[in-house]
Image (cartoon, rainbow, N blue to C red; front, side, top):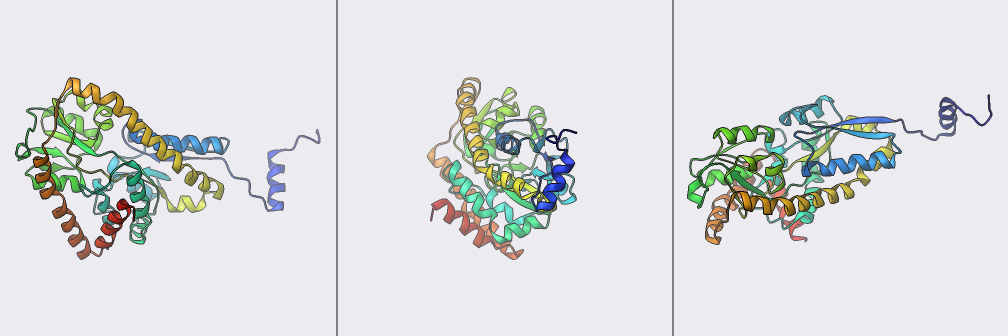
Length: 337
């Protein structure tokens, strides 16, 4: 045998004797719903980063289209250890992680993507939120930040706030409560099911992150109108990892995941901007744009803003959630103080 040809087993043996750890090659599954789109550019970038930096030894395989789990069951899958990573939206099942719904409140004073990132990172570092996720054997990795929500739908455009009265709408979490405050009937509908419900007229309009999601799910193909300045808020959809899998993961791979966050957030931000540049002119040409007056927006926020905040704080506090503390953390971080 050539003395310069050393087997992998021999290398591993020498490494073991010398105390050097040789990271094992592995692939992790990540569960997400829908198709590859702007919303998933963060996890796509994270997967590319860890693959490149590990020399192909550590790969994250993204399971789209509910290959691994349904949208409302991703957190359960993490708890069961069915897959080591997943994205989920807390508004799909607020009772499972009650502390997380603070980030789903409507009309929070979050000015832009970077502020939203800072708020999310601070919020998920709060001990109550860490403990809430730990009940599901979940650990926060990053926030899949979503743009402000707007509506798109079929039928006569909602020219004023009164036109929403009695209308069934897709509106999640605190945004649903805000719409209920002006007489709409909110429903928590998973994204992949929305198109058919709007097409059949079962749902008048759907609120989604504007503008990428409406086009990604092809809602514009069957719609007549869209709103452009309601700015209802955003949905809270974190990327989490199973804590047992994380604890068993080699430290160098743990480090790569955390290092990847900066470029993942950057990829998300760029993806949304690129989609807006293409989508907005197309939507304005194809559909009726509904833009509300300052008076209409003031009435919407008066009904669906602070009253919803105050109620969340009161109800959460009764249930043992440090709601006032969490809300203050959002406001303080958003303000940059």
